[in-house]
Image 1 (cartoon, rainbow over the protein chains, first blue to last red):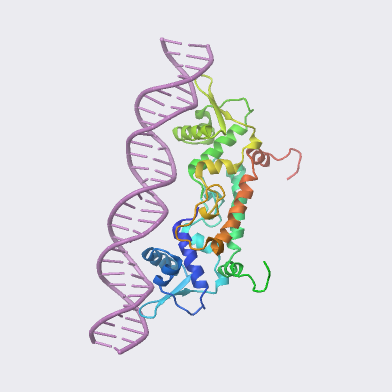
Image 2 (image 1 turned 120 degrees about the horizontal axis):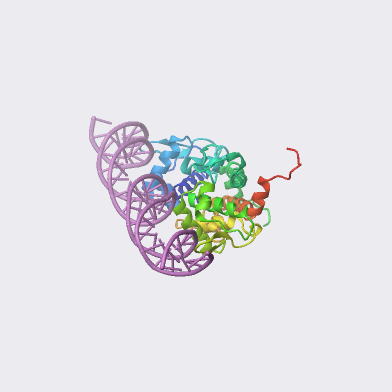
Length: 146
Length: 146
DNA sequence: CATATTTCCTATCTGATTACTCTGATGTAG
DNA sequence: CTACATCAGAGTAATCAGATAGGAAATATG
């Protein structure tokens, strides 16, 4: 399960993705729109900023915007920043690999084989979906009957 | 990420799945073979027993065996028992559904839509793989060249 | 320049969860 | 009866989740 932090990050990023790329949103605006705790959200946006997903401007007229186009930010990037590995076991993680302490023969571990497939399935979805795509799915083409 | 508990449970179940269905293994035997903390494993097997995946016999000559054939025990069952929901968000969980507190319009949540696909992908792998299958993948047909 | 605004940064807090261990009760075979 | 093994529950230390608090730094505006 994703942490609240990660979910909030995704909600905030989607809110920014809905705006024109030069429009700055205040933390408090995002918090209100998405119904999120303001202070916590502030910390989250800070982290997203440090990781280059978001850019900010301080002082009056300041706020946050996406640091790059919404089709270049994937769910996978966000989850990895906020929660770490996508993989169900560290020993099948591509970006956060770590050997299992108890493991004697990693190559022939059946559980690992299964979990690798799970990891790949998760990564395929999350790395294959950008903020822009998620947004587009939500707003189906007008005139296209349901 | 799966908990250690869940990983240990899978390791223990795979160990049992390798044995003939009537053979009882001691907790200490499993712990030694799989390199797991004995007391912790004991608690885990107890939980698997309560949930009907494993059967036990006490006293001298006792031990644990699978409660049903290895092809009827799926990874999904084990993970749900030990760690709960497979889904990345509770609001897309089939077995552990819970609404998000901050959510205003679940039907139109774009994040939810993405996470539903992730959940389905995870569930397809985990519910689609039994202990028997995992075992079979590990032991490729002899005579079949690599 | 003064001031209001807004992000940036560090620190802290509380409660829950994780990963175990300990002690003893209960059941079973010989 | 007794050695063996699971069953049961409490206990514990460390970590993490989910926040909040308070102030420093930057910036637009008058």
